Length: 294
Image 1 (cartoon, rainbow, N blue to C red):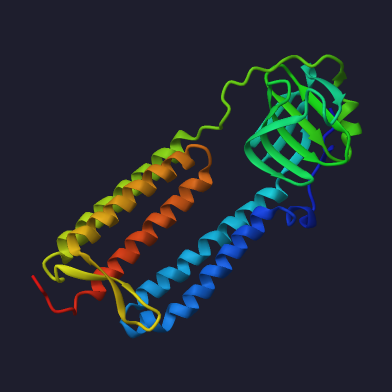
Image 2: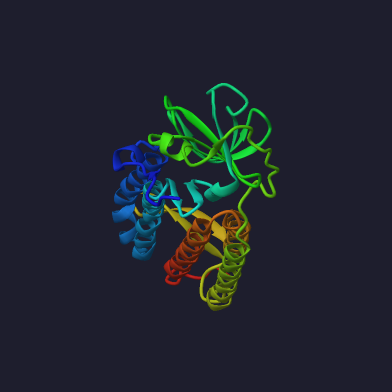
């Protein structure tokens, strides 16, 4: 089998993914809010909160960068006798020595019925989809191009990109064997375990902060400041502590679940949990100079 046959998207095509611009828009919104709140937070001595807010605005930018890089790495290629297809749902490999393929119609049995994991925006589809025939397939499609379904009996992919003719010449064209999905979602137990450990550590950090600050701050702590820098939100210190613990546990459960499907959830979960701990610590410190009421 020749090496080098394949398709990789251009920068312009990757930038058409709306997910990138949604993340950039969220980041710009957070940056704008941070600029508006800067003076208020600094006036109250809560500069650490403002810095943490800026770090938080970097999260969607990191997500946009991750989507962009993964988009550039997507597509398909032939390596030896293996067809590798990289989509938003991961990498699918097909043994071309026992694979069959067929040209299919856009609205036939191999039409995309439901998106399970990945991207489906306008003329672009990348990820894991359930097809009209009930099978699950790794899909990489650009609308308006011929569609080729390829299966080796274990994995099914549906492609619609330039240069598919070169791929078709190396696959037996005929009846495609049915594929029974072993697992719809990719599972990454190690990523989930790492996220769970990080989140558990952040819960311990919240407990440690509570033990350190509970006798040094008033019973009624300031939990929010307005644009002018004046306090406009209050909570009992025990309630504020429980909120921090609750957020750490809730985010831990959420990101552990996400991490089991993608390593990106592990990184994002760790960053978010650390930022929440930093924010809570900044609020505790901002209340140190407040006269005690209990």
